[in-house]
Image (cartoon, rainbow, N blue to C red; front, side, top):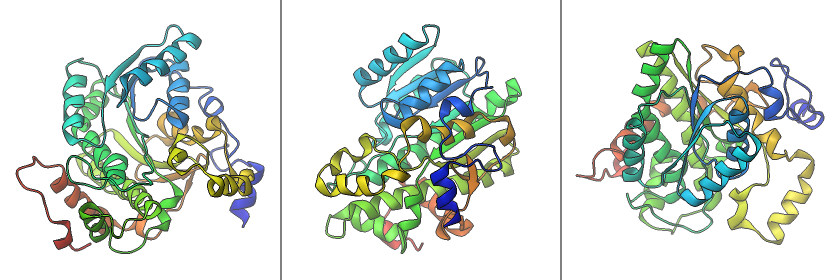
Length: 334
């Protein structure tokens, strides 16, 4: 109850920021002119605002997108406001592991550094679908594609941090909805990757967002073990009406958003936590944490389980391995 009241009035937490802080506000003292950032899902909503603000602070941006045309339009809007911004548009379909590998190869051919990776793209699939790699589409897009993308870019981020002395930042955008999932993660993924009999759009979305949290937890352990000058944290941006809900338009959705309107954030407010975690000097060496309203928060019980995080990592490694054989997730205990 107290946290809800704090959210409603926008009172600042230990960071000095709160639910009403905007991305512009939290980066006011940031100079990012020497940094390069990759932001997925930057063609609309929270991702587009994150890109706009990081460009405003001087960062070089790489905007991967499934629709290059839409990404070019985003680039044009940012350049109209900040003509000196450096923005590179590239193709990436996160639901395709082949596309992820191709994107990383293309990015590495540019010989650019990489300081910030923001895994922001998200999909809420009302209709059941399977990716070309045989994985349920929400999980493939929201989590598995980002898992492979991060894995393949990690070497570049570690090298950049070592060469520049600037700590790298990985930010996984998740959701408080991760706490809605309970049960056997891999069994449910196996079920909905075979057929749509047990498919529930909200549960599938919650599963993917729980996977984002667990990915952050295990990645932070690995980074610490490697003594890498790179951190990984995850964020809940808040509840905001973006294109993510475009498949759920209708009277029920409209009613829910009307009833919860006092809890909704504007897009600039929703982008604040991502920008804060990606740029704030206060978070140097802070790793493996979950943030909401620009302050550290608690995950669900599942989301803080190291064993589940390790097992998910192992299963994910199998899923993104070369397609000589497809692992049977139903035979994996989780």
